[in-house]
Image (cartoon, rainbow, N blue to C red; front, side):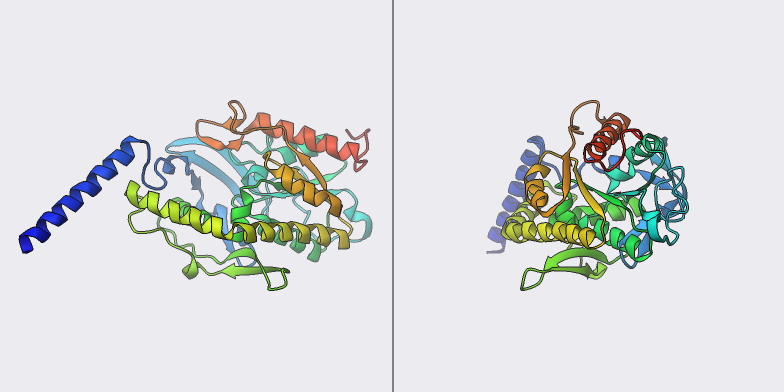
Length: 352
């Protein structure tokens, strides 16, 4: 009997080993295989700091991003946590009356911040050069979701620093961040741990959900409640395949609710801007935004799809960072946004 059990164990082990090898030969790998080389080393390490409202925000100072031992870009962040643009050092002092008139704030994630491009190549900076009589503020923060963008806008208004125009840079990949889909949460947590190495950085993550009457609720997921990858997912192709299948199944089950939640979040932004007399613009960075934008237009939002495909050669920051738009793409963003502002009489042609 014991001999038979031993044979079964050996055969099972060999079968698992054969399947593992076959999966790897067919191109299927453990989770995050090859991704670590795209995670930059940031010096100093205070680029991200904890925040009770947003989960995290940007530290102040000059930061260098390295791929291995190679420096591939640097950036400067002001005392308000914004990418430096000539005149935005004092933007977050309380404002009164008509001081709102010439302020354009651009909210978003790393694409807005200008990940992997210089301080003078990101599109908020370029837009500032095109509109010198306006105050442009780059409110992009790497990793942010629609919820964090919305909270940033609300904080600006509550602090008396209300823009006349708020531009939300939207991509459909923000949806999974907004609702904290388990697949996104797993990959984000892995990246966070790898990037921070031995630093302890626990945070509460803001996300959107719906009440029983479908009204929007912004809640916080405690670090200790974050979902975990299955054991050995980053070592075994079999485990990764199974874990990915489970994550996709979970996403399909909740997809309808997630979509409804994202739309309620977008509607909340529109309504908040309407109440505070802020012109809201949604600028779409991928083609999939179009179906969402068709639902936003009847509610009074201005929308614009970008013509840039950052997956196309020549529009991303390869080889160090193929996931973010390069200087050429940012220049197109700036021109498209400017054209939208001019065509809707939000800025004058003389300023263009």
